[in-house]
Amino acid sequence: ESGFTKLLIVLATLTEVKIPNPLLKGLKLTYSYEDFELKKLLFNLIGVLSKDPCAVQLLSESDVMPALLFYVKPNQKPGFHDWSAAQYEELQLHAIAILASVAPLLIDKYLSCQANTLLLVFLEWCISQDPFFGQGHSLHGTGGRGNKLAQMRYSLRVLRSVVSLYDDTVNLNLCDQGAISQLLDILKYAANKSKEKEDAILLEIQADLLFLLSLLCENDVHRKELFSYEGVDILIPFIQMDPKKLSSGLGHNCLLLSALDCLWSCVIGYYIAEDYFLEKQGIFLLLDLLASKQKNLYNIILGILVEFCDNPKTTSHISTWRGEQDQTAANLLIELWRQEELELGVKRDRYGRIFDMKRPIASSFQKQQEVIPMPANCPSFAIVEISENIRVKIYSLLYKLGFENLPGLSAKDLVTLAIIRRYIDFKVGEVWSELCAELKEEFRPVESDEEALKVISEIPENTGRMVAALQTEVLESQHHQEIQEEKKLYAQIQAVHKQREMVKKSWENFLTRTSNYEALKKAKRLQEKSIEASRSKLKTQNGAVHSTDIKGLSTTIGSGRLVTVRSTPSQLTGGPLAVTDLALR
Image 1 (cartoon, rainbow, N blue to C red):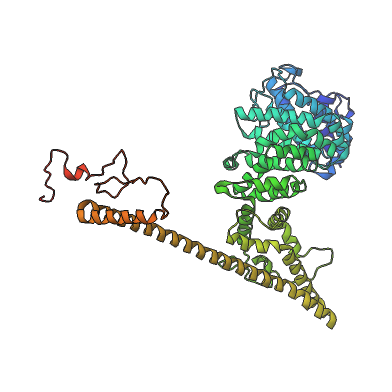
Image 2: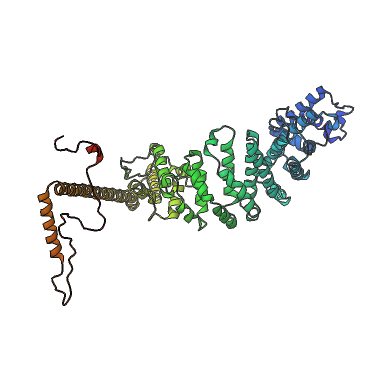
């Protein structure tokens, strides 16, 4: 009201705008250290005023926007405008940082000053081979010593602040100037730099670039087309990130979330980009990431997979995927479902079957909620609960895959699958249960309505009993199968023992024949008798009969030109020069 704020704003922009102002007649700022400190205080004042709604009108009426944009240009030479290189760089970074706060408030002035063009040109200079080396002395110059990363970082923050407004004019203005391809080039540059040395500044720059691309390409097929091939190639390495890095504290978790958000906004919805992502085995990478058990990523990964399933080629990729120990996607999803229900406090018996027939999927917190009559346009707790956990996404994925003939499932998985299959029926039952409770709180229904509500409320309970019976049948079938497998195993063990007994008996017969001559003769006679009995009884007419036996042999093995002699092992006899009277020994 006193005009002091307006005076300070004019003073802050005096050097850059150079428009005579009667309020500051005869005043001139020098390039001394004291005036340098004053300049920084005035810039900081603009940042403080931008948070006060009463001061926004004063900022709009002044030349704050052109004054701040004055610094959005390449540093031409050291000591530019009599500031030292370090001082000018500090003022430049401070001005761009303040611009990120002011630009969303003065969007009309932002567009009229062609700020998008200035920022894109400035960003192009940031990745150029211009031999500029930042001093990195100031607070805003952190990580910018010897490079132009600090300038890139704060310029991207300005773009992020204005693009986040979802103003079609701003975003169209950016895209018409080739912002998408330029942002992809900068992202590629930052990713290559990050391979050399990974630090928090580079990770933040990459996350901001991915966020900008997400906002620009969302719900626009033409922009997704500009992103498609080159963008997918850049996204793949981010999704392949080692999950161990997520707890490093440098910002890998924010970068990965930005990459997944970019995938959702820039690829899904444009079939050519989706197909290219599938060719790059992107679905396998997403499932690998899901299997790494990073709980904060479950929601977004499952959401992406559900959206991808609108592409008919996706389900075959999901079915083909195999994780550690040959785990299938269906088994992984069912495992996540059990983990989610455990955290929600859903009651199950020790075999995983339904425990509460009336409310089979209700969480412990949901059961504690009292019935509160609400307007029709307000969602009930049963509806709100859907968006607060991942169960509906798991159901949607398994629905797309089909509940029949899923590979790699155990009996425990099939028991859980029976519940998942009826998720929608149980959820509808929960809504009806809430509706009945609210009606009873407000008034008493007429007899016909009460009877209808009673029948409706019994449907989920009957469904629960049917599912429980199916689960029991699955468990009994599994138990029967285990018994059959056990019997089969015992039969194999018996056959092995019988074979060993036969081998032992054969060896004993062999020892008897070789140590007892009478036993050998008896075995020979039995062998000859058996051979004779096996011969044909028909006599050959006019033909000589040749004997196949060699007379005088007292052996029970087939005779031939070569004879294999099996004797007592030398370790028992002591060798050829040892005492041979073994019986005496």
